[in-house]
Length: 286
Image (tube, rainbow, N blue to C red):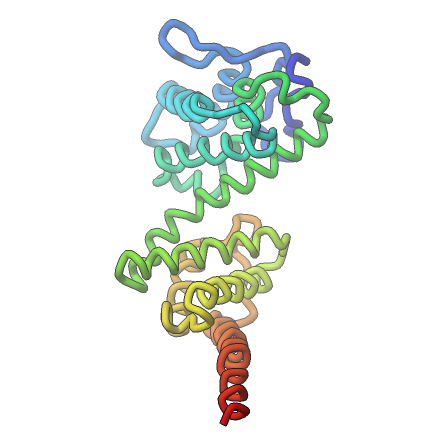
């Protein structure tokens, strides 16, 4: 195995799996087409997607996937950078291209296509062999899987967020604050490893309000009222913004109730931390 690791195992992910040849490597032919290991993975994935795809035939689908996975590796900078950083950067670039080019496909948003094998092959073919030396196969597999799941989830979510935020607030500065707070709050919830929808939504909302409180010096209402916050999360949940593993679950608590609790928590904190001490200081000075 020239890169020190073989392909990710496929038994737990998708029926489209193939056993890739560890001795293969990517190269471009005279027409700039991807050849070798990555091409094999793309052909297998495209064949599995073909029955779901109504706009492109399998040849065009293969060609576009080759472009996405090749383009993602062209501008990677290797010097002084770690393997996890590069794997995640490559995954982000690939999935951004896929959702840009295929973002209107229902099969993509539903998670009916699995590009894990392509990402695995693309990483091994685009990263220099020395970066994989000494890396244990299970560690590499987990790294690629985690990078794929995170990048897919985030790229699936971003268009939903971009569509929802302008319906709630206006002005570029305000929209930017709200966008970043909701995105950061969702990343916090994902990182927590919560596997129950109700708890995930609660964590997401509470973390979002905490980020809003940070950028407004403890007054999240100055950026987004609790009524508008509840409306925003209702739009996101209606748009299937939960991770796919949690999608379809019924929430036990209304969004409005969770939002109200989150705002009360951070408003109380702000009043105690910023208001009360100041009053005591003035009283003592008088």
